[in-house]
Image (cartoon, rainbow, N blue to C red; front, side, top):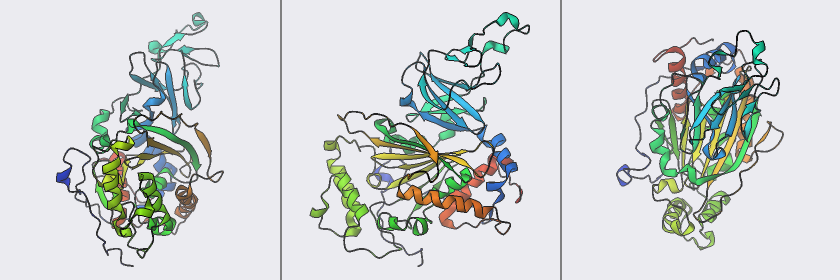
Length: 443
């Protein structure tokens, strides 16, 4: 069918919500139509460039602030070949430093969460405090050269925003607020700090990390990989906005794709949306095409009584998916009642592998007890389900990666619907080759 065919999707007038999440359409950047070289996804040489000029230069998502509420609480997180300790300090601030002992390189803690009075290497008992300072070296007098310079681990920049902890491997990185802009204004009204963990999973995927970012940067693939979603969302009338580093799309939910016929009965997925909002679908007398607006009005009217504060959100945000990519590796499906966050991490040595973190948070209604944090689980792709939609992506991406290895495949042939992918690679180029620069087609 002709995807240029439009249906009437009401959108919020920017003037109606001047202080909330921006809703105006950004002018599309002119990025040309060249293919994106396949070698970017398979080349070890390009992987090394990414490490030297991207991963070690930018701000990265470390974890959730409420995982480390007390002094001595820590998050240990890995990125590529590095491992980082993020530690809550006595004054409430956070600090980060390499997760290793300066003696023989032993890692101080496994990846995960914990609390420590101090960090003692299990090899020779060198001991570090919460600031990364060495407080004990057994038999120090047997080291003619003395202890390591400064007697401390190097510090990494570390900061908090939006209920999350961020760090950088770059000691000269710009301030976090500057790096994230304009994401703060966009996501602030959702109040992620009011949402509790409900899922924490890491899956080992057999694809390049960028293939995963790509999969969550366009809705063009819904018709192929997720056909059931066509009776749940409008994958055609999607607003795309590109910013300096980051990007988003706005997808109408509780809507029907113009690629399929309008059903006469309420589809099961939209039925579930109505029930979760507190509506009784059996009492609904309107058309299927009007359900999206009906859900918005119902949630606006009844949200406060349900303990859900939607006062800073516009009407579209009460139904729709505001999807963001925070460069380089964080994808967020942001909704009024939940956030699904994906952190795509590169493998330490293999461009054909990655770590895929699935973090899900749900709004806790006022007056409702805060639920217990779920236990983190890690497994390989295929060992267990991560849900129908994500399983569909997961089973597809390894075959994408295999196809990219072929000499017959030169690169990504992108449409206007995939503008975010082209913009993402433009930002990569800016970091790797300098602003406006571009690398060879066969890295």
